Length: 221
Image (cartoon, rainbow, N blue to C red; front, side, top):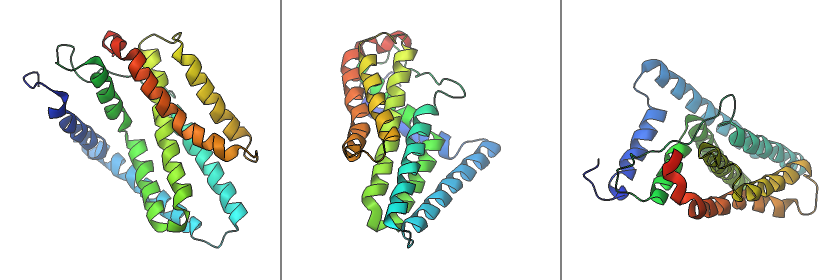
């Protein structure tokens, strides 16, 4: 790998290897678990699509989707912290001719690929294909999973680098406060606006953190 001059030669290979390890592991028992969880995700997506296409009252359906989005966001945010903390790992050796920031982007892309997230995303994509009339609502659920994933990576990176007192932590706490208000006040008139902020802020902070902390990525990743 060290003979290649750029990350572009290896990022597709690293992503393919990570996807294969997650979706189709070499060990038979791990492969069985993977297929079981992916099947459960597709089953969940099929049921969700059927519910969204049912004759349920709009107010009841909106309440159901709101509760589902809350569970998806909180569980995706916390899954890498509990029951044990999953530290952000450096994906490439220090001597590799890739900048710190590109190394950090690679770490995020590889960290993003996990069996639970793949199963959820496949399930929501199936629900989206089944219930086209609620594509905006289900699309928002997809955005929340991506947003919670970015927020989880941001916080775990700071903890992995030992920089939990960095000023950007305050911005993350404000972002989580927005999410908390969105979860606690579902009937507030500004609820939709908070939902948009909740979906976008972690990505904005991901960019801020990449610019601000990229130079420190070689220390602990």
